[in-house]
Image 1 (cartoon, rainbow, N blue to C red):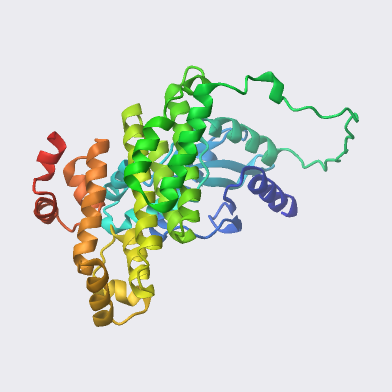
Image 2 (cartoon, rainbow, N blue to C red; image 1 turned 45 degrees about the vertical axis):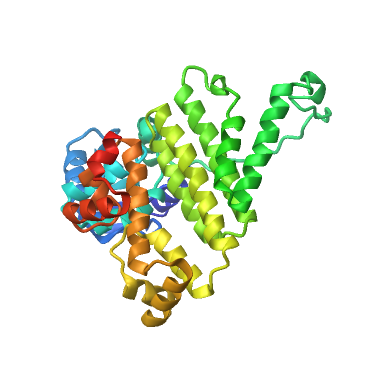
Length: 399
């Protein structure tokens, strides 16, 4: 038993993944996990364990079972055998086989008959899971060998370097330092980051056009989309740092950065990444403008941050007031005085801004978008969209 537990810990440490050993009566021997699984995920897992055990009981002792449940969570299971008799199993998971997008989460919600407000909790949960993709087959093979073979204590031997003086792979003299185009690009980059730092959206957009004069798609041969994503990831990081220098709170910067990181990774076309580029600069500049330059009072600043992070949840004036710890009447009065909008008006405008961005991406239907940005019904989404933009969502999409 001690050896089995030690092997479970080895698997967990090696692959940074949840591991549990279960006996033949489905009782837990050891469970190594972060314990952040939503309750309905745990229930689905219990049902899957029964199915996996059924398969392993009649399989070869050197086999492993692989299954994916209705939450798009995957698991590997390896039998524990003693004297050729099934005595339980080691289960590894959950893990992901593909990057989870908003579209996938909406399908999970529909398939499992969940409320729409599960979008954010599920998104947060998926971020904590390892992404194995096609490597799960090799990992399954390794786990079989770890579980069925006796453990051998390894010895570590330290190796000294040869004492040869380290030389950089790239030396300054290897490149022409006087390239005009390179200098122009880096000057444009400095301007772009400066304008983001002071919240000047108009000049930041102009600097972005100058900055994008270089073509780095050769950096990932045969996969220009991957190369373009890498460049956009880099931009997201630089813009976040610039907005931080502009005075935006770290927790809000983190939320913006995480949101765009997911959108970049799930993009399937260059045009989507172009849209994301513009949207990133827009949002980071808005963050600086609202939270650093205008100098809102603490209560309004807290309310704005909370709304911008949770606008797609079911929130209202009372909910926001409770969450940030201020009286509802006081919050409403201060918010209106400093922003010229009521709390509800600001929430609706934030939702419509996000809806316009999702429409520009072109990945979801307007019905899906309306629910995703926080509206309780499609008809109400259409009503508010037209009130704010002067056109219907369908007209906006066509334009």
